[in-house]
Length: 377
Image (cartoon, rainbow, N blue to C red; front, side, top):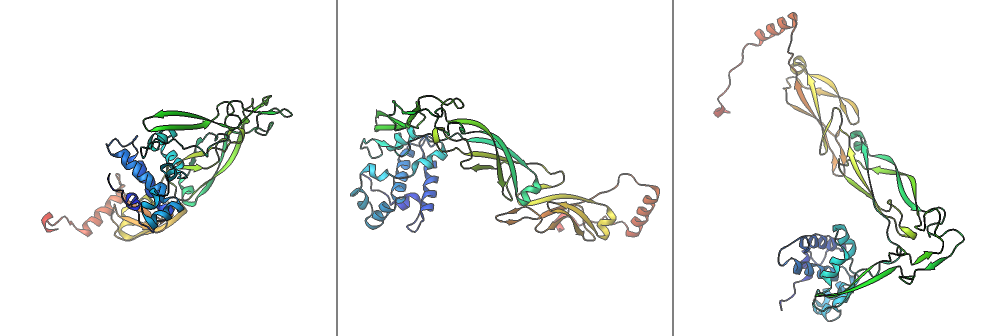
């Protein structure tokens, strides 16, 4: 039997790593080696290895035993099931979209012991409310300063008539005969990995453990009614177009007192008529005429913070870029700049006097068409 690798080596961390560092390292490796994503032959074994390392190092007691005695302090003190008990796999894998059947299949036989393991023991009671998704639009100027947008949306909220218990006021609530008031049901199956136990909220009572004798006339016993609600959404400075913000607990309420879901807000930044964003910087195309470019001038240009003057030095060439420090997008990494692209406009039509003046200037300047060969540059 191959010797186990050091848990810190498995996760790519050192012994001084914080719990956040350990969790971050495991999250990355678990996503990389998850057998439903990685079809390499050894992916499942690597997934089990990093999961075992995380289960030990994320638990202060197990970590202490391991730091003092190594693998002997774990295998001699904890059973295979105890090693994984208490590790927060659910929240991490939920982010990846991996369900409890996957957890049971992988961990159910992780050491070949055939033990049954319930990954939902702590999950009981009313089920969670549904997540919602919406979209908001903000102007580029609002991105530069940060803003607050008022949302108005329909959400399922606790019923105002029955206060969420689903029973008509003045009537009783009985214990659910299916789950016997526990709010959950267990389903046991036998597989090559051992016995798997899947626990889910009771379908009959929606996880509440109770059933109303007389359903509420407003919510029909669900404990929820649709309400139009207003919500202020804070949009931070520097947000990118297409960013999705997650407002925890701002989704629909769960039935029978269950926890609320989340609200996902997709942010669209409306195009500006004159300004273009490039990361933290803002780009503006400024047009000037030949005398202004030759003699120098000062022009007013629009910025995210109002119109501001910029000095154009004499002899400025078409295509040159002038920088306005700090007039870009403020972000957590600092403020960007506004880049003013100078475009010297050549008139297509000239009046007689204009032509005479330009011809006179041309004679004064003389012809200057000599250029060095490219190999002398």
